[in-house]
Length: 526
Image (cartoon, rainbow, N blue to C red; front, side, top):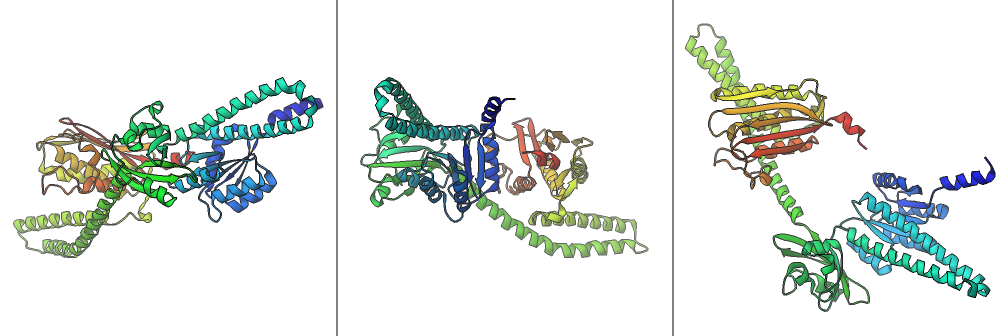
């Protein structure tokens, strides 16, 4: 191979640019490196701003990506140093949903080339980095053209035609860069708009904002108030933070209610301008989750109370069981006495099992209780216990379909057996008459094992489905259910890394399927 061919091959294999990643979380650095690997860029990483500055002096990157929240120097301060040391380096900031202050500060200082929200879209991330390298190349080329123009002023007339074409091309590229900047805001899932402070008129908005309004982005008028365009109101929204932000000159937040949804509105006034950047975050689901957590805390308190009561009952039950067994061994007992003592012993054992179940529900699973176990065997053991309850309803049929050779799953078999018993008990109560069919099966689907309980009962109405796992929610008559069973089962399954799937049809029955991960396959996942 000749020298010229070797040089060409070296150019083909050389990285297309230098990129510096700064984030205090190693998993984020690894994730970004994996996504950007396709770009064939030379990438260096740093876990804090100080290390990033040292790498900057040695590496001289063309593009720098920094997280906003880092120990010590934050992302804005770090990128300010980058701008001073490497003015042409393109700066990209990673921001989370709570980093609106960073957006305001970066906009006011005009230091940031692009923002990338966490979690990011991989394609958007690659496109943004590619645009940053193109922008760097554009600036470098413009600087080179300026120097060439100064050095070759004598040849200006000869090169004028070509220069005009180059300027036109650069103009098109700058227009494209402006469009990409607009697309960056359109990629944000948070509704964002720029409002004129004096009359609330919408001046700019992204696609997410238009979606909340239920209109096309092209329909955004330049003189229509945001409250009329977005919510169809005739006056400013109650709780709007815009007046307070304009008065104080600082960012302000407020809650706005509209059509059963709750939005946290943040307003950031632009320095030296009559415009305000407003963002809208829908927190309806977050507030719903908060209410559910409160209910969960109530349920935990009930569980602690039940555990205490169960512990106190356990001792006298042990005495009853011991004396019944001793009396049954006495010589000369009549058959009727022995039968009565046997009934006392069985009843005491049944109460003891109930107490043990209450104690299991009232405590969290211990690490030492968890192990690899055969799911089919665990389900079969639970079915054996449940068959004893079916003696009072002989017309109810329980059918088992247990798969042999399933991969073992990791967890507490005692707790998962309680989930099986709970689902079987719910299926039994769902039967409209003391007869019907219950089916209990196990199997495998991909990298998960599962067990499923199906009944031929009344089914669940669609309006109740979103709430069946809520604590204290029940459709049973008073005295027939507490509403805690499915909630406890859901908590146990989630604690084991599993998930519930419910199939139901009113009048035909329901099927509850619990999926549990196979540990070895989970380790192979990227």
